Amino acid sequence: MSMFAKAPFPATQAEDGAAEVARDSRRKRRRGLLVIVWLVLFPVPTWAGPPFLTDDPQTVDFQHWEFYLASMDFRTRDGWSGDGPHVEINYGVVPNVQLHVIAPLAYDAPKDGPSHYGYGDTELGVKFRFVQEARNLPMVGIFPLLEVPSGSAREGLGTGRVHALLPVWLQKTWGTWTAYGGGGYGINPGPGLQNYGFVGMVLQKQVLKPLLVGVEVYHQTASEADGRGDTAFNVGTVYDFSEDHHLLFSAGRSINGPTNFQCYFAYQWTFDNSVFHLGRHSPK
Image (cartoon, rainbow, N blue to C red):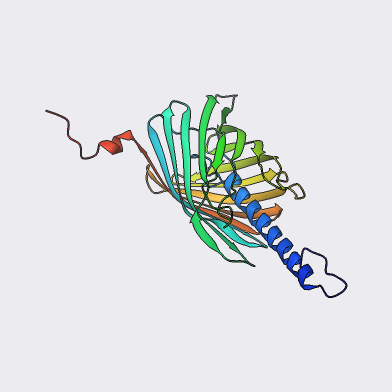
């Protein structure tokens, strides 16, 4: 069904052209919103975060690395969007501080328009854990993120503006069970857009030595001036092939929102700085 009321009489050519411009403007706006949701809600953060949207305060160990080769996909009534693949790198630059970057190849495939594929917006962040977990105290950290407009907004591969995410995350573990979550504030500039809040919670269990499963519920308030919020869930798993090599997957959808289906799939390699000394020989 058209989002514009039909005229009671046949439209003139000028009116028809104006209606088409308006419809194209709304399509671009919806695609822009999908890009923002994808970039902001799927930061794909560190270990306990992926494969879920909700992050955690756990930082990468000092002088250790995380490398992800991943893809994320969203389907709404307007079509598909996401990336495939993106590269994520996290590095423990000092104890309790992690540097973060995501470099994506993004796509936008609306039902009623041309598809586009190319480099998307770059994500940069720093995670800081300032409270260590204790018996009666959760781990606490912050993870501010910036989305740098390196993708084409015209083709639906970026937003054309700098966006920011300012979250606080907490985590507590009891035996084989771990709960983490938190919330924050999104700075979302642009015509017809507005800042928003978000919260999320994950409960996961190490069911086998190499296998973790979890479930997540999250909510975001409206990021458009005339939009609505989104409440969604995901179920996910992490399988450890070894201490360094891991496979991650999650899938879900909106409970009350625009996303009919969303999924995340990734290979993760964890290592330390010694990998860069392979093949080198000590001087005699």
